[in-house]
Image (cartoon, rainbow, N blue to C red; front, side, top):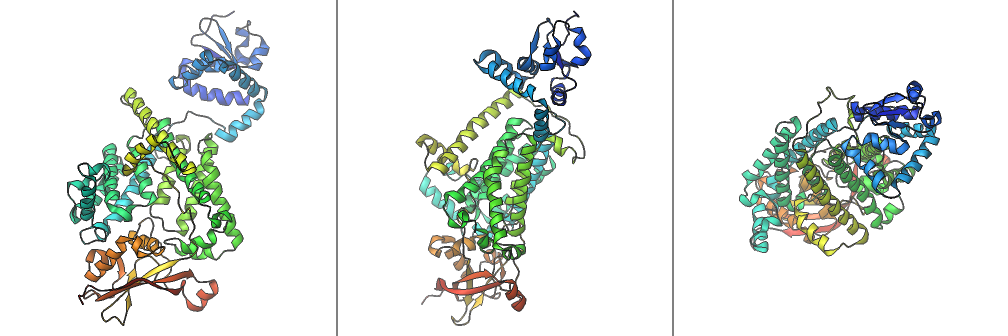
Length: 595
């Protein structure tokens, strides 16, 4: 008998493809703390171990001469790595764990060829420890781009929306909040504009956010940039009222909050997978829980392309395809939103497939509809589904593995994040499916809701089957009327649908919502009409055509039309992309003149 090896020696079947694949991974994990050798080379050195034992299971020869076999040997060898030490502890301490582990090991060992093919299917032919340095770096760069787009898009329209001469002045809003909430209004309306709000400060916040976004993008004082961008965007969303109440605004806040704590570690990466899961799965379930017949009958896309808020020119072409294709597309959408999210927690290759399917759906949405930065942000959230093994082939340089500073503190932060995010989002899911949650949970969620760090999602739960459009008109004599032209929403029948994403024209978007109900449900619309009568330059800057450039009109009104895409034949005959039919009055004739 030879001298016991030091370090421990793990002996495996060198002729087994399944064994070789996993042993290569373990070598990378354990380094020189464990030695490895095929039994075909070293069996003669250990005559006390029967040959059948070598063929049936791995053998771990310890420095003291003891020999462990099977699952026990695997767990003991991996115990040299902190994050895998729990397996040996469970094997030794939890009743029944050892028996179940050895049974599973025996089952796999008896079907090594099948297990090898499963390994290749799920993880690939070469395994390596999962690392996320490139993933983290790329995701933060993408988030910086999305933040930059969001801030620049707001900068060119913020004063027309909530400025002093805008439709929902922020100063008036904060005054009303303060009178309602008393001494601590910032807890319900968290915004830096409690320190002072003006047109200059609104635009300065957008510019400052853009600068912080650039810092995030290029990696200079990135953590400070993430904190600044989150605070600034939260402040703008809070005072933006109806104009910044879209789901992607809150998705950006939630992703931005998590990014402040992002490190290339599995738990921090996993939280982004959980966010993407909730986004996609809740979007699918919302459509079913709404009991909308258009979704249940798979006919939703027969309406969607022409009734969505701001279609692209490609939407007109997609609207013309046969109904069978539209139904198949709905089936694909449900597959991606209801089935694929669960694959985001599967082994590597299945997880990458989930990411590819999600990207495919986002690409189709991007091509046919203007949804601001939503598609780009969702695509960025697919990056945490990847690992460095995939991205390394596209990276110019291999990043050095960063040393985690204050590891005990970082583990504590990870624990706090998990203990906060998972219960909060879990109760949100509970409410979605059951309609209620425990009262203590509701109180906590209500208190954190204004900060946008844990949200619920569900786009297009109910499909609109018609497209009412508001046409705003002005007149100086009450007889001859001229239309105001919007930059992006449908108006002129001959103008093709425009491509404006990732910019979001928020007035054009709100006009779509306003058309679905009376103006009484949208106080901003009344203010919009007043600003047109006043000739507010900030509001007029949001429009494409002002038929009264010299002075504002004496009268103003709004009428409601039903808009539909033209058919191929109608387009050839008329050159029109749209056809419309007058439905009636939306907003009555009004004037600032005293009678």
